[in-house]
Length: 113
Image 1 (cartoon, one colour):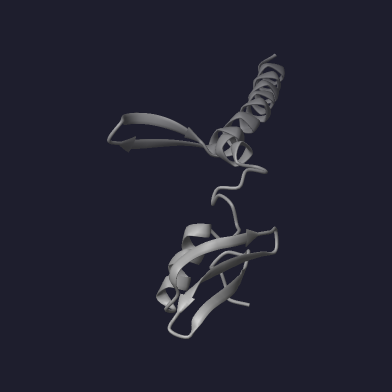
Image 2: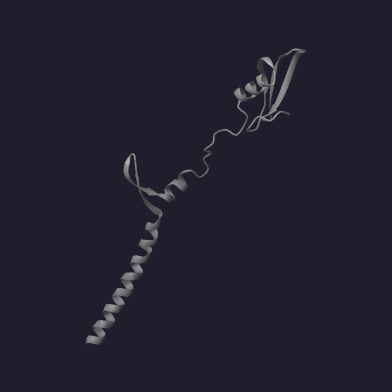
């Protein structure tokens, strides 16, 4: 009787150990953070799923104001944007020699073409 009771207890302990182990592994994605807002629980998987397909940096093209600033820095006075396309930005203005235009690629950083 004692041997069978021992065998049953060992079997129950093994079964409960198997059921507890997946819950321990799932809890590893949780983090406890203390900050200015107080104490909070942070779920790593939630934030990863939240930003899938979301561009965090904004548009990747050249900002028209940046193109104007670069043109003014190169000596173009009364600079204005004449044409904007998905591929380029054309800025026209005056220099000492007369009318001049600059063409910038519509990419981040506004490289001059």
